[in-house]
Amino acid sequence: MKTMLRPWQSDALEKALRWLVVERQDRHFLINAAPGAGKTRAACAIAEALIDRDEVDRVVVIAPRAEVVNQWADDFRLVTGRHMTKVTGRDHRDIGSLGMDLCATWAAVQGLLDALQAVCRSARVLVICDEHHHAAVEAAWGIGTDGAFSEAAFALILTGTPIRTDGAHSVWLAYDDAGAIDHPEEGTFTLTYGEAVDLGYCRPVVFHRHEGKFTVDLEGGDEIRVSGHKPAELKPEHKRLPGLQRVVDFYHLACTPLYEQNGSTPHLNGYQATMIDWASAKLSGLRHRMPEAGGLVIAPNIPMAEYMAMLLELIEGERPIVVHSQMPNAGAKIKAFRHTDKRWIVSVAMVSEGVDIKRLRVLVYLPSPSTELAFRQAIGRVVRSAGPDDDTRAYIVMPRLEIFEAYARRVEAEMPAATQIPEGSPRMKRCPVCRAENDLSCTSCNNCEHQFPSGCQPRVQSCPSCAALNPRSADSCDGCGASLQATYVVTLDEALRTGAIVRGMDLSEDEVRLGEELAPHVRAGILASGDAYLVRFLKLLPEESFARLKGILDRP
Image 1 (cartoon, one colour):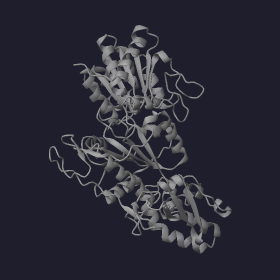
Image 2 (tube, rainbow, N blue to C red):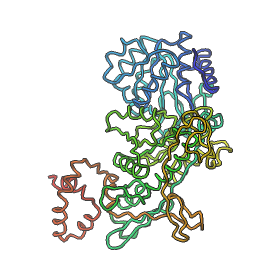
Image 3 (spheres, rainbow, N blue to C red):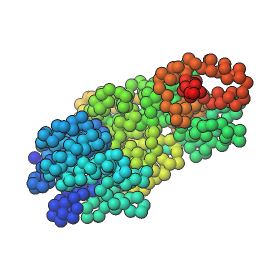
Image 4 (tube, rainbow, N blue to C red):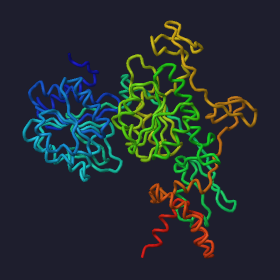
């Protein structure tokens, strides 16, 4: 039984066969389609057609990460009926004798170079390169890809973000002066995000720019104020302090955990807490229309991911799933989240390009890389359509940062005009069991008597001018219009705890513990020296860095 294809996928299939087989203009065909539009199914259909026409013996898929590789194997079998074996760099001696279709990560290609070359020489191979921007010409992955598949019969190149932010070019493709892919139009199929939304393949996105005003308290009563649109203004004496400008950067502060005085409980009136409040309320509203809708937090590092998870648990009462590279079975946790109705998953570089979780609808965006490529890939996680009756929108909660706003404006410019007007609150809610429509006030389904969950109640704040209650995330009072934007106070010590890493000190846990043990002795020694410069320097360094500092000073 043939897989039903979307119209654009059928068009891409027809165009690819004309370019690769009928006209034989070139062995490379490019699909540049928006994240979530269905590139994987289109590629599998093209592979199946080439196999059926006796043009290809074996198929090799290269994808960004293990979770995506697993998805490819599943989809490939669903479409073609053929088993695809996942291989790693440790399997280089065996893959030639397997005689099967193969899938691997980009990182594994270098270790499989000789074996993949042998496969391409012994059989007619179609190589499918997913997220091809990884294969920069002068980078290891690009060199490995070019060497491994130089003798492949065909190469199907897939991307949703065709320009690398660093300006590097990917193998096998030509580029114009602006750095955009300049592959022949006849050998390219393009589907923009706006077209995917208009055709119903992707959901429209609404951006929430989350404003924040920070005050950083310095020693001696000085303070520095900063917001997303007002960089810190440092006094002349402050400019001489090493690293201070980076510590008081708005985005750095937005990614700095704030704790209560006990040092372990997240501050429920902090900047990140208001982001979570807004996102939590939006997710609860979305679940009226899509009962299984979920949310994703993209965190910049593991400590921040754990902090956001604690905030979510405090605000919603449910611990989210957390996934990162140092966690065992992260792929299994992602798969479990995909097939449950759990509300939130918090990720550090794990739920990213290619990871398909169709029920994701809300994204809290606090990434480590701030590139447009990463931004668009993140959006792709929450815009996948769940089917023809999916009438939801996707929501991005992000710091009100100029660079993010520029990216967002470019995305919004691609969307059809009708989708750029935010939707109102849903008037009906859908039963997750029988999918019947019910009034929002119903506590159980009128059709099957399913009991609706009560949902999370967003926290409120009192307006200082008129005492009216408003959602905690509101920017202004619904009653009198007064500004409700809070100023988040951060001490220099709090900012510097993360700032040490920003300035190049990636401290291990052992170094942190030793630094805290050494702190009293180091402080006493520096203060006893009477050296004004060292005393000033001491105030800028967190205690956790003292072990690293001592190691540097002790060097011969």
